[in-house]
Image (cartoon, rainbow, N blue to C red):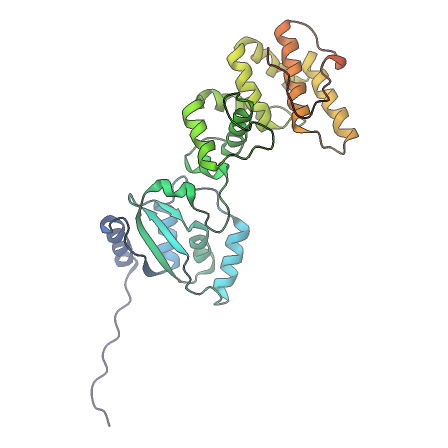
Length: 293
């Protein structure tokens, strides 16, 4: 019979102790270190999301729900997927898994990587493919979805950019670099706000890009053009009526190039100081665009 006394079980760590361990790992782990396997419970996950998740991309509610269901069913084993932190302590991958931990109340055992350069975010595809809008959201750009779409259209309209067609797909980092290096953020944000105030007969991302270009041509005429679009009057009414007609005849789908062409032709009438007629703004070429006056 073994009379040896039982060894006392280790005392569970308090939340404060767990957070101190995490903070220490973030502060001291050098770049390139191997991952650390950690148990992240709901309280720790919630703290990470509240303190270290600034300007991350929008959460994916469907994914969080699925992860939460799997965790609650004990169907979320330790895999090679990692929770990632930058060298300055920002969460750069794993927010949906952590949100599922909070929702399910289940502790997640996972690999955690520390000390990464924050720029790796642009090259990570963590479960839900990152979009240009995600990068804009991370950067804290207002109206990130429309700003991203407008930036893509401005790249397409830019004659210095290669492969500039409506089907052009630019890497997310290239899109963000174009915004940072080639566009005036305040001007684009102003045109995005203007586009949002106009009925959805015109696609707002494309419209914001064109308003940006029109603003460079003539701010006063652009203000008049936007006001007329908003109140559906004068030449802007001719444009919106024609778009409505095209949508009715095409099952509510109008080719993007045709839409952009109609907006540009209407703008050209404003620049010329004449009232647009329907016959003057019709366009059949789905590959090329008219010049902006």
